[in-house]
Image (tube, one colour):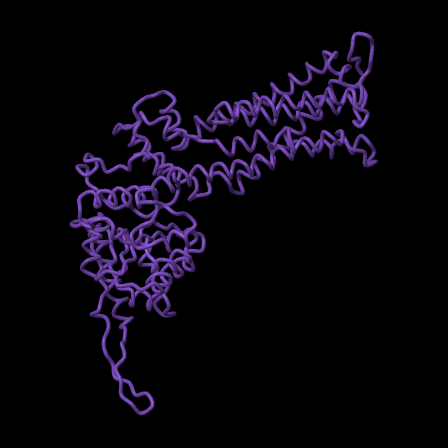
Length: 509
């Protein structure tokens, strides 16, 4: 939901018009349906819609639902005669059905312009609610005018109820926008001359409307990737770590003996794997909008927004894949070391492996495997996360190992020296890691070349420093984007080629 431009900005100036035109155009390309809810009159609201290119002439039929559908009727209350407004629901539904049929036959888009009183009545009426909302969802642009604060909230509430699987966002700059901002899933307030009530009531506060593009297309998208991958990896690394203890129960006759040392169990999630994962979730950026600013990525960012809309990363399929993948890795980290130490001599002086040597080899393999997998899927490196991998992923593990060599509180007391003097230890760890990495790399290459996504497409072009802003590349990106989405999303407002040449892409900030 989008309000009209703040009053601090000249409404019909070319600069203001271009800013809002850019935002609405790019939101449309990202599959975001834009509604403008304003308190202005119908004529003013229509002019705003045309100025911001929400409404277009020639290729769009604008359905106007205004005061002509409200009639006065006399009613008797307590013996007195008074006039009350009567809304002709049947006539509204009949007219929008006719206009929708005409637009479909002519291949035109639909735009809806409706007053606040009528839209509030339509979304609250049991008879017309479903049909009206179904029609509004097919419109490329919807503008609600002459709306009060309560009517704005009612519109958002109706869309939330009608589309339970969708996310609504409201943005406004005045005190009358607070109910609408509070009603939406995500509220954004703009600091302006109308006060700070909207900014204080919102989830996010911005200085100007054009920042919304960066908030959604860059920060919102990256935040989804970070959180989704963090959760998936957290389940994966714990499956790799816990399943060997389940396997060991079959060899210990279900005695309840723990496979790993207690202190290693504590440090695994507390130190060895948590810090590198936290750093990845903090700094991960798949396509850096500042680092790669030599390329006009602002034109292709809207095509990458599908990942969060369709839950492409965090869903049942990927969760099952990570769990099965973790089970496969746990089998390798347990049974391969077991095969290496089974009935063999591990040192030159004839020492044989025991329970401590076996669990240390398995633990070492597990820590290296989950850390290298995280490192392999890292897409943005800086000195902080590299240092985190080196210190917490490997350095502290080696330090804990040598502390356990001299401290009797560990079950593996005085086993580290024997372990490090054994060629079997290095061979088993190397074979396990190489096997897992080979399978992991094969799956990654297969997904990149066979199941490529628009995200992979953009990363490939930015890596090779080729100009992605060419008609051929954009055409391929749009085709790939349509295949990846798999569903028909709302069509973006039409902006002609000469408008794009004037610079109607959002500016990087």
